[in-house]
Length: 499
Image 1 (cartoon, helix red, strand yellow):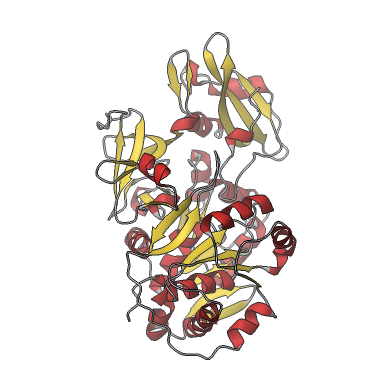
Image 2 (spheres, rainbow, N blue to C red):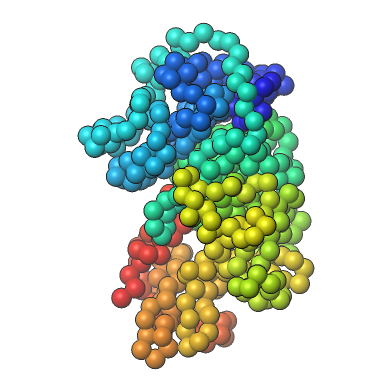
């Protein structure tokens, strides 16, 4: 094949395992051969709409087969796939569509209101196509089957994934086909995937982890992906038992919700081989909840810019090094450095920097942001603070920008949050720095209590006494019903009250 990129994967899989199930969604199964046929027809349809090499093809919708079909069909033509966060407001979506200058937008019928608002605002795409019976299926049905083999090299852009934008405007991270492939290779090595894998894709595929860390490695190996349009803890536990799921990825909030489900105690989890968590530091209590069920619960660490894998805590170390993000993935190098770029000592906090073939070359049409993100030698600045122990295992302390200085001492909120989550009444929490006349800044804990639990601020803060240095203990506690999160499940600390 002349196409070496991700757009060729359905054809390659179909010739190896045509009858194996590639996707399951809402009870419908799609084989690799059937998926290849649909991808080919969609690619021909996009070609008929004028899509050519380098054009951007956007998808707006939940985890559905159409998302995978659009990704692969765009890649078959040498076009660039742009997954859009369906939780964004129309003005935010409009900004991304303008930024990437998409030629085609394929969208889910359930988002008709958002697309209507985009049209009223002057939607600047050549064509927009609604999925389901009608436009989308008609496009596929009227196209003849036949090979599509555009010459596409591994170094060409295959995807633009927009950062979550927890601070400032989202940036388009350009990932080449090589970036995506090398990330998959890292996962295949770390998770030791087999063709018998059944992956529950419940994290949104418009973000890098659900798509690049779970779905694409499963596809590459020839396993089955069970797609959930939207995460629901009860439904997730039911699907795990029904389809004998072996592997899933989630953010801490998702895994915590599963443990609070009334189905948790009786759920059939016998098939589960590995549970991978990322997106935020994982509370030790949450890790234990899964380990108590005999499950291998491990953490990974990465960024959209690293496709996303950078660190991984492998199964044999999941208990011994619980709470660590692990060590570098096989084909990725990671360092923890001081501001002068020298290596930190054991237990000293520094910034994580990353290098490897899975690391992006930069941001879409933002040369200044690209230049600011990279150090000499191609090392990417993560913006994340971490420590590294004497065995080389990295412990993420949180975002460098989240750090605050109290009485001259650096406080990393993630460290405090980890201990707060050990309190039996605390379901979730976030720690922020707030101004203080005496200390400059002090911590404030924003706490979500477990259902039916009760606790007062003094009890929460008293729990930390003796577990953390005094300067790290927050001076106040605010209770809330829920923490504000973005589509990736990360807490948006800028929205927390700090006055």
